[in-house]
Length: 243
Length: 46
Image (cartoon, rainbow over all chains, first blue to last red):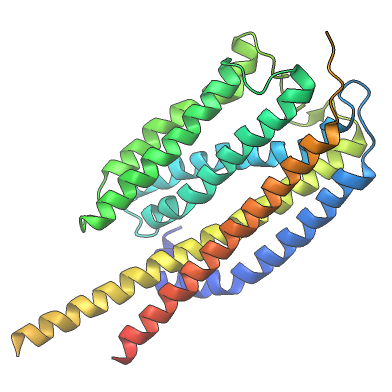
């Protein structure tokens, strides 16, 4: 892991991966959403609204996966002081927030025809909304730390770690409390989903994950480039001051 | 009371939100990266 602590080595790898990740993600998403819209059959009980599955589930997966990655990066930053871990966590925050919001919006659009309501204050929906607010707070904290010249501040990392307590709550909420939301259809090694939905869903989830990865690499490259330009300008200003 | 809702309008709205949002996020990240890398190059040349 520390082999990539060197930003130059990381940048070389990131430049190599950004476009292939994005291109393969876009192709997979286009194919799976095409299947979701025109290939998959209507479901017996939910009718055509089941097609929302192909965008809602990847958004939920990336919203939760994003925060899990922030928590791992925060732990890595706090314990091992890995120089890229904090940058990775900051780069994940905006796409994570976006996919959490997308999960809430597409869930609401699915809930109206399926449940007859846009929103209910049950465990799953509420904990997902809390996740979106956690992302917003993380972004605000990280931005404030950067603005105050404390990019290495530990506060966002501690917040990223503490916020991870919400992830198991989201996952188990449909088992712990009564909910309109259905329990998980896919668990480790088994699925209750018909193959015509399952394969399209897996392709769409993989495609969106690849796009997510490409976006995180772009944002990490942007943060690193900003830091390098800032450091160079500061050094030059100090050299100018010495003359 | 049962409602006769057209499911396709909800499906279309979901897909449109997802595609437009993901495209905007990707474009925003790409432009931010290009801007930052151009700024770094300028600082190197100065």
